[in-house]
Length: 206
Image (tube, rainbow, N blue to C red; front, side):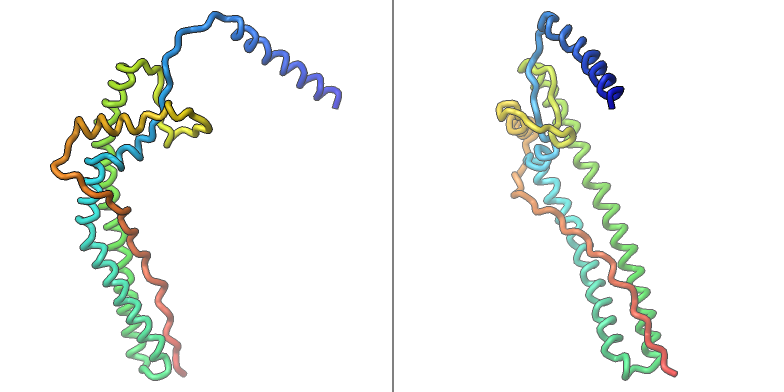
């Protein structure tokens, strides 16, 4: 225990040296530090709202098709469950095969829709983000900022309200990138339905 206390005291003394030296060093000229939530800025920009509204509209037919297919699977599963004691073995096997086939189609279609939507969404974010970063850089240079952090990417536990430049960047972005019609805030695209549960096994009759 004594050795641990000695080692801790030595460590604290060692750390205190650069801190004391830093306190004695002459202050350097520092610019302002800004904080922005670029993800929120992208989503709240007029262009972002329009892009995501267009994406939601584009994928709505595929979402509806997935929902229709899931309803068909549920109807077949209900039919199989209710007819467990009345349907023939052959009919139960046929229903089981139909359910399995439709579940495979649903799973593949869901994965394709998710991948396609993700590609389109990421491309839109990348395109808007590149333009927004240029605006942030210009704004930082013009207003004497030494550093601008993305609060959505780096944990920031405290920041004065006047450090948040999200609204200012948003105004500048919309002014530099006007859209034909400002779209209403688009709801988050509905998540694609999960594949239906595993096909119930028909009860074999003796």
